[in-house]
Length: 306
Image 1 (tube, one colour):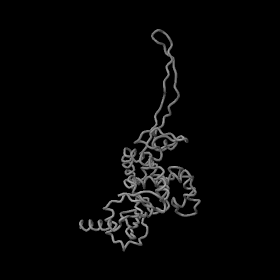
Image 2 (cartoon, one colour):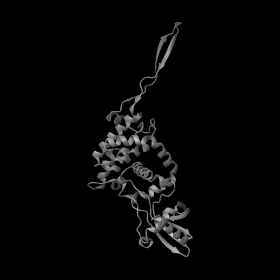
Image 3 (cartoon, one colour):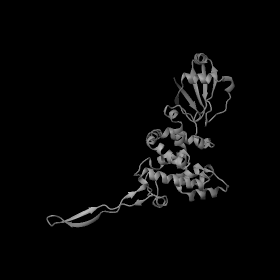
Image 4 (cartoon, one colour):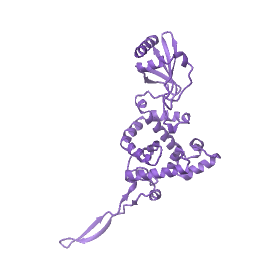
């Protein structure tokens, strides 16, 4: 059934609630959970519901069901509103990126695993180049992982620029002079998926050593450089600051970059709920008509399943 819902962040939308879901709600014990606190389920916690019965109608409050990958837990509140807005405003981009990633993410994950790096880092290839080998940034970064010339060289990626066309003159069979134009050079390992991904993994491994393996600081350094991250850390005045401590001292582009990294990982982790519009980021109240009938049917079916 399709039920209308409302929440603190959404005015009008809809959520699909199956009979089996209602069974779960009602058989958990309505009285015992009526005053349950909001839960952002980041592991395997059961979805809660509180129910208020009103003259033939019922208000069912569903707790947030978004789940964060384990490596990104701990600061959910700071990211939830950003993720929700992104999921609404850039829905087509999320779906397109997810589908394109099916070809590349498993290969990236396998390489990251060889270097004992968090799997979530695979999302960087989507943020950097959208899986485009020929991507070139305004700053001159090239390829899948957007390496600049110097960094590419440091990490073993060979780059031979394609020079302008050279010309030479030869004599044809009839004695006439022929001008031959030939393109010289041209090789860029940054456009090679395997070579550039291994280089990116080595680069990220080094950043992990530099940043105490703080995942979000590693991501920030990939965007703005390790020097800028160190400077931001210093400005906090703290001994071991994390991303949320240094966020306001980083460039705006880097802040958005890290938030997009978190967002795509969370949305892909909840992709089925995202695509069927059942993903919620805050408690959601559902008005259920014919409440007693739904409750009776749900309880009867639950009893039959025992």
